[in-house]
Image (tube, rainbow, N blue to C red):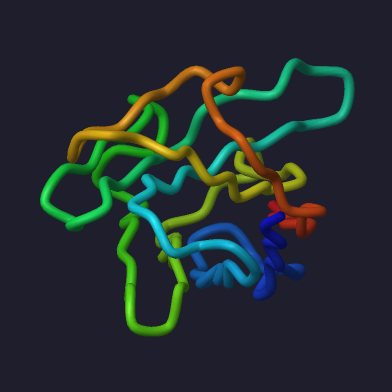
Length: 126
C-alpha cells in the first residue's frame, strides 16, 4: 500500500502564490509518475499537472500553464506544485495522485492513477 499526504493549501489573495507538497510513503520502491488534480464545488475533478519519474517530462492543463510548476524530489518521495498568479477560479480541493508506470511518461486521466491523497483546500479570494 501507498499513502499520499498533501500539505500547503490555504487562503491567499488573487495574484498570490502557494506551494503544495505531497509525500508518498509505503511501497514506493518502483517507478511512478505523479499528478495533481483539483475539484471545485459542483464541478468534476480535473487534471492540473503531472510529472514523470525522472522529472524530465511534465504536462500542464492549459488553464494553469505558465503559472504553475510541478517538480519532484525522488530522494524525499515528494512532489511539489508551485502555484503563482493565483486566480479565484483556482479555488478547489487539490489532490495528488500516484501512477505506477513502466516508462518515463505522464498520463492525464484520473482513472489511470493508482493512489490518491486526501486533498488540501486552496482558496483564492478576489
